[in-house]
Image 1 (cartoon, rainbow, N blue to C red):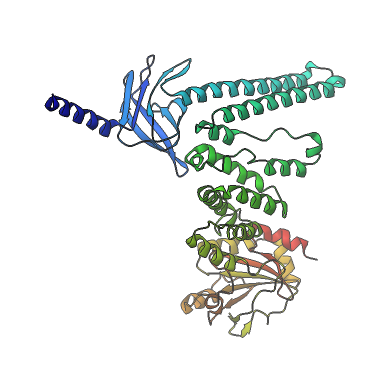
Image 2 (image 1 turned 180 degrees about the vertical axis):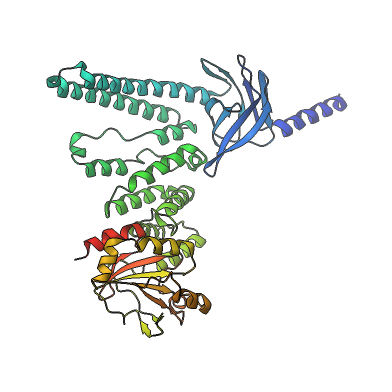
Length: 464
């Protein structure tokens, strides 16, 4: 008896080892395709997980579990199922039948709940869309003009009720399913309730409300959500709207977001890294220096911050927290193109545009070419109100010699070389990105740090 039982158990255990973690059966009874693919999300892009030649019933099996996240099913070019949820490494054995009328899951309560939830959300969205249709019809003459305000107020009241009911449904569904990843998915999709009229009297108040409440329901406590495009898209939307805010509101709201994410290191590191790429990266066209400084300062207060990050943030803060608007820039030695030796402080002018550059850098050449055609800049130079000083700060003598005698050296500007390399040796300026421009007053005090080429005319125009 044992001799018979042992091989049977061994075969059974082997089958669980080979296909013990994931088994998804896909039934597509009504259509024919070439290939069926399962896609997931990784590092901001969609990634193909599995592919099989089409059959009405396909079984995708793997001894490895799928990572927690949201996946979707496609034919070669058509999305057949826009989302199914994987909550944990366990219980990844279920089937789904896909037809023109919808999708039905077997042995996956969470995905059944999720698709019921999505159908209900679609109903709310359809109700809101119908209000928009009614408004468009009214604008086209369906309602007399004297009744329009009453009609609009009525539509807004209906929209508010729909929004409130939708919000309450989402909250209850999330609460009822806290043991599922579904709860975090729902919270990520939630938006703040509609503000009252008192909260949005001005455009600035509206922008502030949206940003302040953008992450009200976000599940920072569940880092699994970052394995989905939902979180990626949520953060992208946040970055798109925060540019509309001015200091100090921007600083305040970004710091509040980082503090909310401190519930665990994965959430904090993820949101910090994504915001840093946009707000803090020296190659980002959307960087906001004062906000990035506050981000770094906030990160350094986080007790769970890893040592490597702490060291990097301290170094970054030391580098960026210099030559700020209102400060006096450090002096350095230069030799001018005519051979005279002087210093930055030795150049006298009511205003000075300091242009740190490498003469052969393509971007530096492009920006110099654009500046040559700026009429208001040229007028300010001609009147003696402003000087432009280009500075080469590296050690190749040949590059400096070639540039100072070339046609690229605009004769209306001063051109200098930091011959003793003090700028780089003493880390006087942040030269990771060039050209790097400062607009300075007569005392070499910063009016604008990291002036962009398309800002030059506007700043020159505003000079008293």
